[in-house]
Amino acid sequence: MAGRRLLITGAFGALGRAVAEGAAGQGARLALVDAAPAAPAGLPDGLALPGVDLSDAAQAQKAVDEAADKLGGLDALINVAGTFRWETVEGGSTDTWDLLYKVNVATAVNMSRAALPHLLKSPAGRIVNVGANGALKAAAGMGAYAASKSGVHRLTEALAEETKGRITVNAVLPSIIDTAANRADMPDADFGKWVKPADLAAVILFLASEQAGAVTGALIPVTGGV
Image (tube, rainbow, N blue to C red; front, side, top):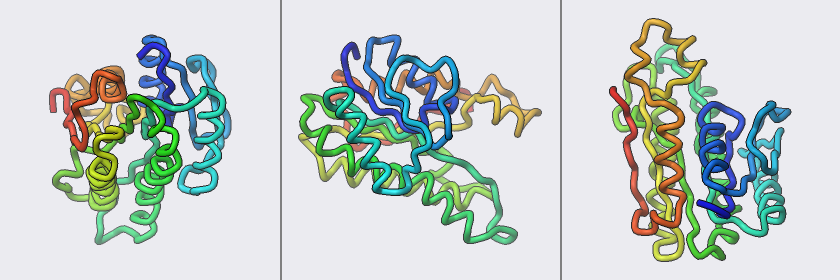
């Protein structure tokens, strides 16, 4: 990973930050993109780009081009940006479906499209997406979220076929990630069964590495003890 140029979206959140810290520890050079208006303290060294709406294709393109210019190219795009809502179909709103598509799918599509010209110049270009194990079979209240993450899965497979032999495109499918927000939402859960952000980040970084050249189009469950 030393010297590899990584662009990480959703980089200010729990998982994005874990990926950034793991990558920095292995000597990668980083561009850290997030919709949050300001970068938090203590981020790893790199280009921080706050306040970027990646569901807007023009903003995504600008962020990618700025990152590639600053880093001298890109070797890997890691699409962590996303959000979650629990809502039943009966009691819910179409607006929730639209929101989750916008934040979970459109961001990954826009960033992948914008990054492709740069990644295709790399000797080992990589895209890693974050899907969801819960999208393999939707539970009650998970329809909108599972549908959006299923879109990420299909994007991963289709783009892997389109770019086969040139770059690799894969996705990780975590179960519940052990974050402060999830603990607050589910205080009675067994946190020991959840996936630690650092453990999930390690899988992501392998897929973003030069060593993962034989893996593409894979949807890899990372489910801890669940």
